[in-house]
Image (cartoon, rainbow, N blue to C red; front, side, top):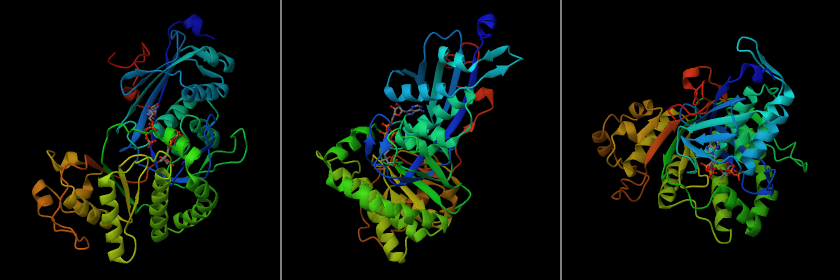
Length: 421
Ligand SMILES: Nc1ncnc2c1ncn2[C@@H]1O[C@H](COP(=O)(O)OP(=O)(O)OP(=O)(O)O)[C@@H](O)[C@H]1O
Ligand SMILES: C[C@@](O)(CCOP(=O)(O)OP(=O)(O)O)CC(=O)O
């Protein structure tokens, strides 16, 4: 390594990765260590401008151990999942040379160099918004860039999978399928892109952040308990999901919103039924989640065909997918009628793509107060101010990207420590 001669260089890379939301859920592992699922799953990747992880990774001969900071706080890298990702990426590292900086790292030298990692999520961590998916996809993608790993997205997805199952789907934009695979070593348990983010541009995603507190049962623990105790999980994995996945692929291919919405809602409901079928039962949704489901179901029914799909991960937050912008604006009016902001102005109550507010004719809190009651709902007089923390309006987005602008790096290029430390 030229490093000894040069001394204190720091080599860095920064990447940004999106999160994803499953429309056919992954719930249950057949191998805990390798993170191999009991069924295929399908997701949509969300726009990284609204929900993403940004990660800077650095190596330097001056670093004495591997270290990581998440959202500004140092966390341990000793867990098996971080170790698996680091080991698998280091194994695939290639020769690197930067003549100008006098850095030359040979393939075998990467094993001896320690890494510093700093990551930041632009949305709540561990709150059922798949921070682990964005986080591990970003870590693997960015380490791969730093260590000059050959670009094989299937292989990167199988490494990200070992950080968190759902992370393998965040390696691509658009619509993504995680193929469960058959092999014991997990080499065929990889994600593939079904269609990119430009394929179905009409879709608008509105997320109701019902609670941004950390949840009681993590996905990892929850699905382990379900595998051990839920008979419904076995039936779901073997009988229901295989045909649902085929139908979902067709719906996506043909922009068939009716099938897409029906399958999405049914699969979310079955996943939560599996949670209830677990002993002891797991409750991820709450009264607010149930009210949102009712609102969407009644509206869809009154229109005679689905306008909006809903899906809930391991938490109470609702992810609503509207067939187009007009529907999304109507949906927002209905949501804000029942869940008006409490102590917040409209522009902090709806984040992300705020232009949906003017599409819905909502410019100030008075406009929200003047909203008419949704005619399809029987109960109009009750409102639930404060039950939704805030809304995010988003769309489908692209996969991981390198952040070339060095001013956005989270580590200092001289010390290799988080900026501001
Ligand atoms: N940016 C990140 N970089 C690396 N790891 C991350 C990052 N963000 C989150 N994680 C890891 O993911 C863990 C949180 O995962 P967890 O599954 O509990 O929540 P979630 O992913 O937000 O929700 P869910 O997967 O249920 O939708 C964190 O404790 C951390 O280990
Ligand atoms: C409900 C889900 O969001 C579960 C995600 O589980 P994780 O990927 O967070 O679990 P681990 O593999 O144990 O890290 C459904 C999904 O994303 O498919």
